[in-house]
Length: 578
Image (tube, rainbow, N blue to C red; front, side):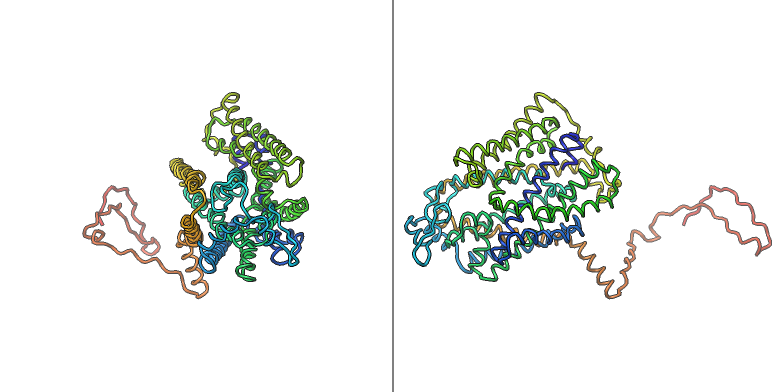
């Protein structure tokens, strides 16, 4: 990402987006370790501080050795395991133990309790209650239609949805790992793969939340809001339903998610430092070996530093949910300038720098002001309120978009030629492996761009606007409506699991077959199969084949054998037919 910024807008913009790229990688890795360490501590009893340093080593070891190729293979295996556990949880909640109807009745009953009844439910053996309406899920839900969980009309849900969209926009545009994966793939594969991957990924928040998330509330497990914000809902429900086996499954799922995403983040950070700092500013003529050496060092250092950083966040009282909601405030201002960089020829580099920094400052200022006004003071709790977080996210995204557009149109009217972009990207040792004709054909690239653009806009419209809006008229879901909702989540989850696990194998069947054939020949000593001779058809017989004209040939023997001087060879145009 930063190399493209540098190629189009120069070093000032390059340094700006380098900073925000690091912010994205650090925040994502922090969330992994905050949630992972909290879950490991809850399930195993391991001290949080030890877990914060222990978890990164699982990423460091194979990422530093295998690099980007290792992350691709590991991501496939890990994601397959994650979806396997996801299918188990959906099956346990909605098929084996409970059903959609029973979960519906439990949720309906949860919001019917009065304060006195909630105090009785959440109380010690001696009758002393520990219930707090802001801490435990019992009674009507503030901000929800009729206080119900079974509705899409929710002020809290709306604010979280906005924060979720802005924050994930920020990670997709500013996280180097997304750009690396896209650039490493063929253009046609990248377009289809990212669209299909996005659809499959949606099963994680949708299907997992519909099963384990709703179950924790329906069963009224004694989880506090802080514990839920730390990501402890899935392990709590899994342990409640399956005992020790559930804990093991969630630990496996957690490890797969952390190692898969953590390896991608480690590679992303090492790439930013090795290519965008070391090669750009320290050693412009760096060889591939030198860059690889720097990358491996950075992977180890970054893993250890992130363990310390996540521990610092924990000591400050921050959890996974708090950092997740804050993410868009930090990196949301970089979304619109990067979008314009790739799609708008009039996008100004100076305007991008101004828009990104001013948007960031405005976002942080508005976040602090709203937190202070709503809470009366500034602390972790007041700054973590939904109103403060959503304000910072919206200001970050919208202010930078407006500033960049106005500056580009009114003050720095450029007309960039995108054909110049490719010429300024420097390859390491001019390595063009993997760059075939399809990867450089402007017609095919334009087709891939149109293909993903149309489908991307349609999918965004359906998931972010149409689906929520069509659910609003239902008000509080009926039992049949909720059953239909659950059915969609089950189908989505199982369908995504099938796509994730089987489609890569199907698309790579020829390569996989060739590998197994080579292994069989190597192990069994079977010689390589000779290519079968081509059989002549009737049309290729000598009787019907056209004559081939050859030049006249003169044959003579060695002069020592015959004792005669060979005759001179004269040029001849005479031809014979064969």
